[in-house]
Image 1: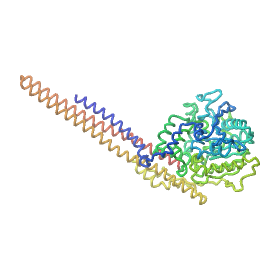
Image 2: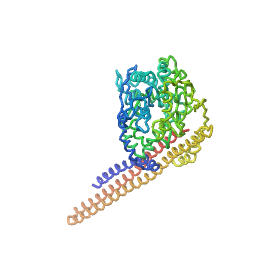
Image 3: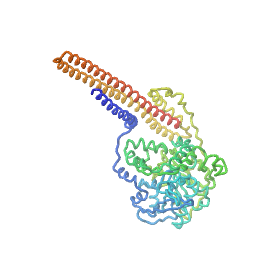
Image 4: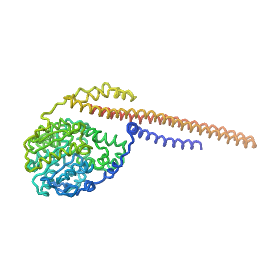
Length: 628
């Protein structure tokens, strides 16, 4: 009976300790977030926006008081694209401008990206109010353009496309359809990020479409990406390997909308704590550049509800190719397959100098994806650049072109001015504007030699995390300085100093994360030790009590046996000795099991926590390596 009691208690201890170990990992993950961030809740106005995270583009436009039409376009290779048209102003006024307007989203985006912020910020809605017939593109493979005349999106062949096919087939088919529907001969084109990239591909591969473009405006233009400082640079070397994985496991489909995305939008990204750490800093700012001054954080749940919207793994790999190679070229199939496709081991480059279309480039000085150096290289190769200028704010990043609180002043109004000039029937391109702010030469960037972190880092062979964290904290400014360019003038110096401050905040948070994790680990380990020891004491005490109860019972039996014959007394005494011995043996077994469990539990906890800490340190090291 005593042994059964001990076994039951030991099983209960094991279940409870298992929960404690799991709780330890949860606390390790969440403790720094709780420590470093506040618990502000969204405002009521933000709550109204939250309800729109699951709405479609059509529903969002209608909810803002505009008419909207859905049009299907079939490309030359059979893909069915869904275009969204805003044919009138909010008041129902017919278009008054001479040329329709075609607007294209960025990579992994949809037409929803342009309208989810509402009429107060949306460029298409404001241009509709200005008298333009606005058409919104949806690239093949995204949420709205996942159809084909002879295939379904579940077939691997459906996802066999890259940026090249979007530029060569999607844009020409859409342009022809818009011009035929509106009975016009030219249109204005606005491309954001990838939207500008595929336009340059079309201009190079389909020169017959150049006369159909009245003017082109590139927002955060992408063609060359060799100087990108985005976290995508760290992922680019693994693009081919990841492409193979996506081809085999998901038939080439890359990051479509998912239930996890809806969960992020409806829960995690609605809470102020996790919104800033996970959705804002880790997902958005790490890729596009941080901007705590202009980025509208209340839009994060809406953004996560619509983005990413899916594309092909080949298209994503094509994007990564621009990062790895300092060229703007066709998709790289590998040396052997390139010979079959291009009759060359290297893919051909797109001829940007052949694009005879009036183009305006608008970029952000804090855009770590489309770096200013790469934009200037693009500008130098385009023969008809009307103007190339940055957004007014030096903090402007890649996503601010869509979701900045100052997007009307910084982007929408300048775009309106450009379109108003080029839409006039008497206007013709005569060269760059007299007051152009375009940079005529690519300014080389000189980077300071990086600190040899691996030689100085005491993490090598160290078990205790504290010295390593002290090293990072003490040398943070020096490490940051080693990654920054040498400023060319006072404006550069001011911009770089702001970048340094942003990096101090970001990586200071990483260090505090690890320090808080280590501190929390110590606290939890002590609590875990005390808890296990307490349960072991309880087991021993219970066993002792059981021994005493057994002894009393045996003594009672002795007294009863005393009234019997001597043989019966001897038998009773023999029973006493056996009972006491068995009870003592049970106590010893129980205490031994408890002690063994304490040792096992602590060792298991140590191994698990050390693994978690090593992983954390590894991530910090990788971040610093990429940062360097």
